[in-house]
Length: 183
Length: 124
Picture 1: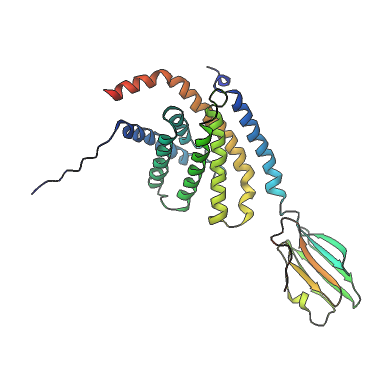
Picture 2 (picture 1 turned 180 degrees about the horizontal axis):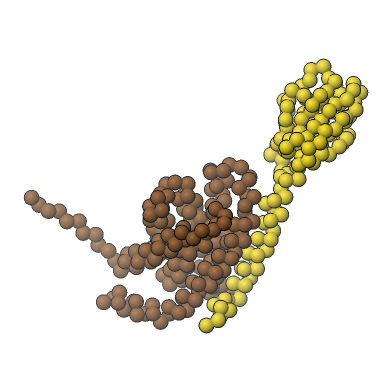
């Protein structure tokens, strides 16, 4: 009997993406556990990870981390391929789209808070578009839009500030992480 | 470390734009389609405009007699009409913008207006 061994060759970047995605998944579970008055409004804590990844490792890694988070989060919450999963996918895709542009804005003027606010608005925009087109094909869905907009602005600012704070604080520690990775 | 040190000049701009969007979204989302009313015409001229949110019943005098129009639960209908065929009465409740009931013999029409019209006109 021959034993076949499949060995996946992973790079340091794969490890980094996996580690960051794990953090994002953990935060999205916390997100789902926080009770909020209106369905559809969530703090979106895992976006903090997306913002930090975007600032440090660029858009490509951020897209990977977000995609993994949406899929794995869907599995863990029992939402995979359910409407809620597609809603979070639509939100993630449209906010990644705007982040691709936002990351190109001059860094001197626009920081993580700008990214966060833009991403939050596009997140809810993508979700509303999908809900209108597919789940609730009636203009009634827009009735709640103002609440979503206010939530997007407030959580966008809060998450952006947290991400910016972590980025400033982590400037020194990043080098240390880099060294342990190299070892 | 203060919070303001984490903000860059453009961040304030984006936040202000977001706040404006929030403020604008309220009337945009809530007024549209809400100010719906029924326009009652007699002989081509507007006879009355009825808010669909308030139940009401009006009598419209025409050349043949009285046409009765009633508003109830956000919809409107012709209750009775002296016309021979009763087409407008049998049309029943009108609730969508652009819907219209015409009592041609008595020269009375009822049209649902307000909100965004999904089409310019309807022909039967």
